[in-house]
Amino acid sequence: MRTALITGSGRREGLGFEIARQLGAAGFHVILSARRLDQVEPLAAELVAQGVDASALKLDLLDRASLTTAAQRVEGQFGKLDILINNAAMMTLAGSSRVADKDMDQLLLEFQTNVVGTWSVTQQLLPLLVASGHGRIVNVSSGAGAFWDPDYGLVNFPGFEMARFGAMPISAYALTKTALNGLTIKMAKELKSDNILVNSVCPGVTATRPGSEGWARPVSEGAKGIVWAATLPDDGPTGLFFRDGKQLPW
Image (cartoon, rainbow, N blue to C red; front, side):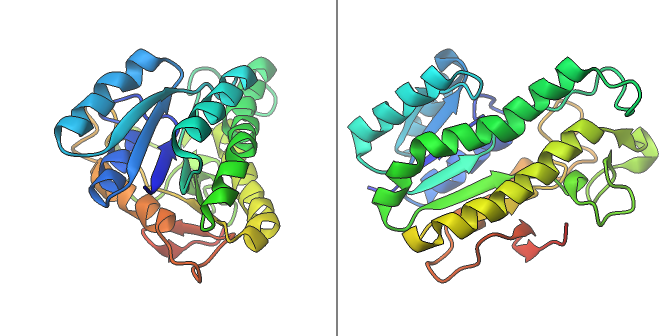
C-alpha cells in the first residue's frame, strides 16, 4: 500500500485536508496529522466514509518526543512511507515585522515551527522514506519567500487581492520560507542517491479562512500543485521551487 503523511491537516477548510483528499482519491493511504488527535480523527473518518483509506496521527512539530512516537507508529503500521507533505506552519500577523521592532520570541517560534520543525519531522521519518525506494518530500513554501520579487517579504503575489487588503508585511514568515527553500536544496542533494525527490511548492493564496472565498483561489487548486510534486516519476525534478507545476525563481 502506498502511504502519504500530511502535517498540519487538522482543519476541514485547510490545505492539508484537501491534499489528503486528493492523494486518497489517487489510491494512497493518507495519514492526517496535527498537534491534537481530536483535530484529525473526525477528518480521517470523513475521508473513510468517502471510500478513502485514511488514518489519524498526533504529531507536534515543536515536540520531538511526539515526532519520535509518530514515526514509530507509522513504521509499526506500514513499515515505510512514500510521501511526506510538510504542510504545517505558522504565520504571525500580530505585532510589528520591522527589523527595529520585531518581537524576537515571536520570531524564534516562527523559525522553530516552519524550519526547525520541518527539518525535525523529516529527520524522524527519513528511514521510512528511504525504505519506500521512491520517497517524495514536498515542502509547502510561499512566494512571499522569493527574494527575486520586488515585494519580497509582503503578501503580494498571484491570488492576493491587493486592492482590498494591501501589502501585508510578514517578513518573519517570508524569511522562514526562504530558509525552507534552502533546506529543500540541501535535502534534495543529500537524498538523491536514495531515490527521494524533494521540492518546494507555493500553493498561492488559498481560501482557507471564512470570507476569503471571494478573492483567494479555491483550496483544491492550491492543493493540485502539491499533489503533482508528491507524485512525480523517478526521473522528475528535485531541489526546485514550483507553483502549479511551473518552476519559480526565488
